Length: 139
Picture (tube, rainbow, N blue to C red):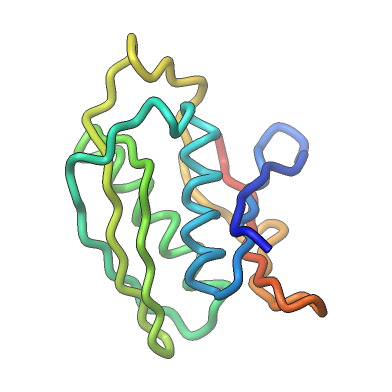
């Protein structure tokens, strides 16, 4: 099984789903899926690192906090991210995101993600052992 991400249809918004061998991989892939809503991750050079910390009482809320922290960093720093590293210890997530300044000509952004929501929120291990981290993002 290879860690990967995908989108799933949800009315006017977009569902993002990360799949991996561990919850951390699934969170990283969910972040990549969210990036792919905005622009092709392959066009984003991961040159600048940003540290992100989040704390929540459960994995689902931790996913929403992680994604919303990335939305905040993208908005305030005017960056797009294409590489992610997540470490989860209990209720605390420590992560890093690498990216570069947003460039309309290079990245051709499709939409702006306003935030991660609790809609279709799920972080769970499937019977096959894969971890899934998903939610709907407001665009």
